[in-house]
Structures are given as structure tokens and as C-alpha cells.
Image (cartoon, rainbow, N blue to C red; front, top):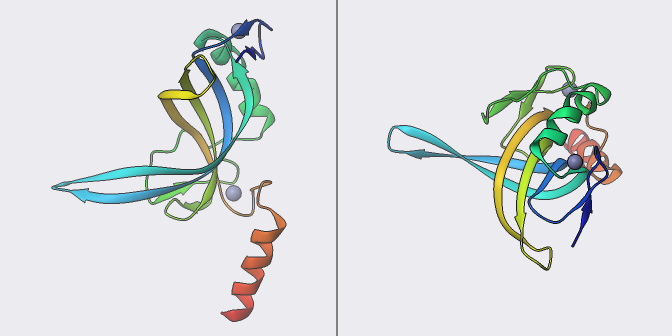
Length: 146
Ligand SMILES: [Zn+2]
Ligand SMILES: [Zn+2]
């Protein structure tokens, strides 16, 4: 499997560096004195592919600015600031995140290993353009019920 770099237009195979939109959810577990966070990714949509860290680094600030993301790189916590409005996002519930991911792929293009994952921003429901109609309908249903 070959990918085309968004910056230098070179074809490449692996590792694949991307900027992704995804639905995710965090789970927090107490391990002794520490709280450990676990990331569950339900669905991911790749926005851009890059051949190298240099190519990604050179374009990432532009992409972030174009998306209107201002509150960046939130720590994995139960409540995180929305990337657009700064309002609270409940990390333990499914939410949309923008992330930088690096994948090692085998020859068939299957993901062999995730070698890098950093969330660049998370979105609250009112800023989330990916919130589909079904989820909105569900929310209305809940509002009526409550
Ligand atoms: Zn490149
Ligand atoms: Zn927001």
C-alpha cells in the first residue's frame, strides 16, 4: 500500500504519519496511587497523510488554524477544554478528537504497530461538526425524557 504525502507529494509506504479526526472515549483506572488513562478509539477518519515528521510539522499549524482550534494538546483528563470554545468536554463519554498518529504498516498495508499518538484537540458537542443527525436526535430524545 502506497500513500501520497500532503506536503511533498512523494509516494511512501511506512511509517504512515497522519492527522486524524476520531471518536474516542477515555477510561480512568486507579493503579495503586496513580490514575491511569486508557484510550478507546471507536472510529477514525484520516484528514492528511505525511511521509515524514518534517512534512507533518511543516503543515500541522496551518491545518490547526484552518480548523479554528485554539485550545491545544489537552492532557488526558476526565474534563478537558474544547479545542474551539474552551468549554468542558467530558472525556469519559464518546467525543470527537483531532489527533496526530504514526503507524508502522506491514507490506499489505495493515497496521502493525501504533508508534505515536497525541491528541491535538477535543471538541464539545456544540462545536463538533461531526456530530451526526442520529446523535442529535438521541440528545433531543434524552432532553424530552429528562
Ligand atoms: Zn512529505
Ligand atoms: Zn466547544
